[in-house]
Length: 435
Image 1: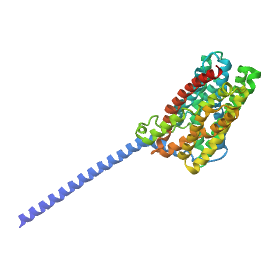
Image 2: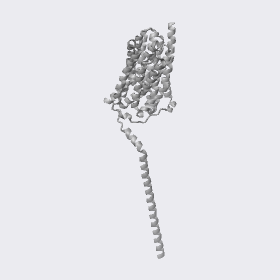
Image 3: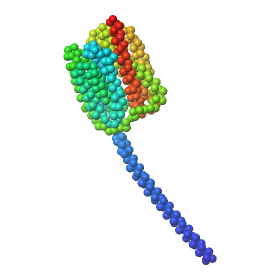
Image 4: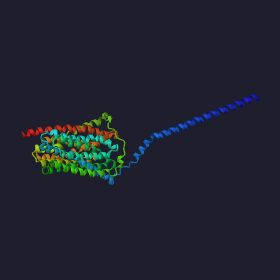
């Protein structure tokens, strides 16, 4: 019995010791696990700290106020910028007629049209790069450099004597400057408006027609009395005043723009698998084969084909540009009720009919009617495609990239090719009518 009891006590002691050792091991493992978990958490916090800081910076950006002094100053500043960058582009028809008849008469009309075509092409293509640069916080340098290039190009144009000088000053220099200002001016307005964004952007884009009317009238009135150099300088001083006034308007309260944001991608290769995107982009290409032709050649056609005076020919262009402002407002209002795709298709159909009707116009009254109707209905060709893309895009986060692709790589080449062809056609027709 004593022996059995001793064995029992010994085995019990060994069991207690084994249980104690197991508890110690478990405690040690749990402690090491806790230590490792705490270290991992510290490492995660350390790694994610920059991301959290950036997220905090993003969250500190206030929501769009949809009003107030600073917000409406952005609209006013964008309006002034668009007077310069698009006003000179749409008024190029006045330059084209004067260059062909007087200033660059030794060059062909198609060669002269290269000047305005390159200017418009750079305006759009450089905008592809200006959008991501704006997202990275470079709005201020783009505003300064863009306005400088536009004004500098105009002033250098007043000193030009030959074709290549005009091409560099008006085509390249002004086109580069306008491209740096094109997208950021609208993007800045978009930051300050949300519910009233369409109204604000419409007011900014109305500067297109205002600038076109101002510069065409100045060109028409000053050329006979002041001559080409001082006429261009006067237009340059107006552009300089617009640029200087746009600086405080666009920069007031805009320190938030200097903070870098997530830049959108320059390329979206998934678009090539989107059938709707490809079909609509092909449609845009054909539309822009004809869109800018009347704005470039209305004065030339009126003078050479209809025998109007130079002043009357330029005022026909003024009428068409002014009518385009009504077209922008009207097409936007109609799209609000009928939808952007149906409205765009309707205006495209009417514009196509007008393009064919232009062939048979032989009277001044008929051409006046054509100029007004073209300005009204063709405005939808540039106003509504952005809304259409928004409707057919499956992912709106890629909308900006797709718009830049469609406008930069497809719209601009279409305008470039057809403007040159149209110039040659008008020359052949004018030669046939005079022979």
